[in-house]
Image (cartoon, rainbow, N blue to C red; front, side):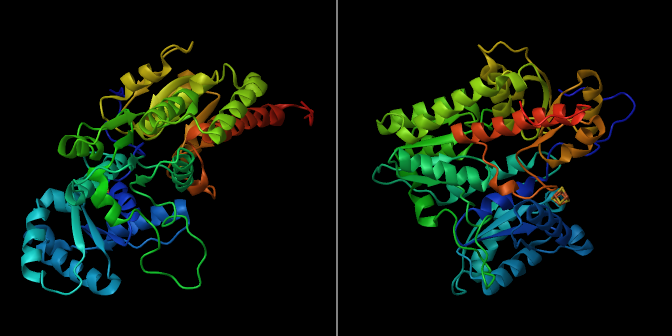
Length: 452
Ligand code: SF4
């Protein structure tokens, strides 16, 4: 557990984000889907603002717009009216309803309200499917909301059937660039895949003359229904909860589930490709083997610029695990791994991924905030920070580089195009870190230099 400073008890600038926001992002990666918040209007406005700032794409999030009266009498009527409005305006195939702090606190029974809704309005033409997920933000993170939404969709839509050759790929909340990369990998392995969710187009699409109410792209509902007949599932996350969509498909439809860490760095990517190779009976594809070779060459060329540097890694737990694994591989000493999450699995996951690499185990702090991270930085004296934009003020204060990864990236463009996964992702991360170290030294030089 994260050590609390003795002179205060509140959270100051949490190192996690709102739980239903994660659910909305997951719903956005499903074809024809409108994310819908059962709560007050302010939650939807806040989340839209946050998501737009990272992805630079418009995103509509519907809301049941509860007011003070609903906090006393419940929000059932608003939820039903909201669903009717969304159906009429958007004509969606699916509405993903996520609860919020308010509706969880007042105790609205959303599954029961949706049951009533179907009885009352089932004969209204073109009714979409409605899937709900419980996402009280006062207990959990955006990643937990994301995984819970995916699990809820699979539980409510997937069915069994005759087995096929498809692999279910459940990557969690990665970037659109990562999703495009995963599609390329599955093509290289000649393996049909259902990637759920897939917001590679819906949150990183082309400029259009006319704004579509629901953007093109996302995992097809017909493919989600067939996930129970897949050959295997691969889910990323060493800190995932017990119940996931992969585990559900395994226990309900006998689809073998492979739970792996996010494929960040060499060893975790090797593990992912070993599983793909065994599932589809193929060797490592040539393009990926070549990328691995180039990466090793780059590490040989550039390790002297990063070796022995001390890093603080923060953010959502599985990203922290993957980054820590990668940093240890390239000779950077992670001194602190920090997250606002509290899965209870972060420390053991970090020990697993660094086993056999000659680095010291870092301090691990969970349920933490940026006030505490700044306090720890005073004694740990890191050379760099790795995480999202919320670490910027700390990096500025300490005059050290911030390597921007994950979500949110609010002070740079291109957050949606950061590639984290695979050998190519490791290559980009390595070049970014090495160049940041070189620039720091260059800037600090009294005379400067232009040749290494
Ligand atoms: S009130 Fe709760 S659900 Fe709404 S934006 Fe804040 S943390 Fe998220």
